[in-house]
Image (cartoon, rainbow, N blue to C red; front, side, top):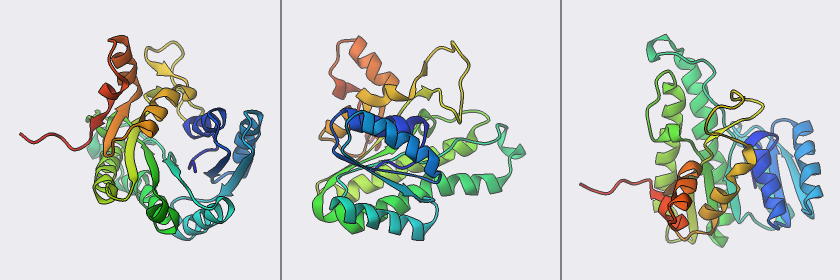
Length: 247
C-alpha cells in the first residue's frame, strides 16, 4: 500500500512496484482522478490488481476504513509505504511564521503516518509481519534556515520511525526511512538544470535497498547510496541507524 500515490514520488513508487513484479498494489490519495492516472500507468507495467482508495490520511475514520478495504481485498498488507506529506508552504525565519501552519504540517507529515501505520499494524501486520518505509528527507537530519516547520516534522518522523522499529523488532516487522533527495515534482518544481535535482523514479534503487535489507530503525538517503556505489562500497554502507551511537 502506497499513500499519496496520486502524483510525484508516491506515483513513481507505485509504478516501480508494478515494474518490479508486485501483483497487488493499493494506492491512496484524496483525488480519484489522480489515482486513476496512476492505476492506468501501473496496469501498463503489468500489475494484475490495483486497488484505488480515495481517503484523507489525516481523517482517522477514513484511514481505518481504507485499511480495512485493502485487507479485505488482498488478505493483508506486507509492505506499507507512508509517502503522503507536503512541504512548508511559506519560507521564512521562525518568528515570521504562523504556528497554525506548523500544526497542520505536523498533522499531515507525522500524525497521519502514525494513524495509517497503527491501522495497518492492528488489522494485519502484527500478525503477519512486513516492511514499513516512511518517506523522509535530509531535512529530518539537519536544520535548514527558513524551513524550520518542515524540518520539525521530518525530525519527528525520524523519531517515530526509530521508536516503531524498537517496538516491532521482535515481530518480524522492519521500519525504516527513505530520503528521496531533491526531486522535481508537480507540487514542488525545481529549477531546470539545478545540480542534484532528481526525477521521482530515481528512488527505485534506494527503495529496494531498504526493503531488501535486514535492518530496522535505519535511514537511507539516495544521494548517499550513489556516493557509496561510486566509492565501490556495498549498498549497506549507505544505511545509517537513526539512533545515534552512544558517546
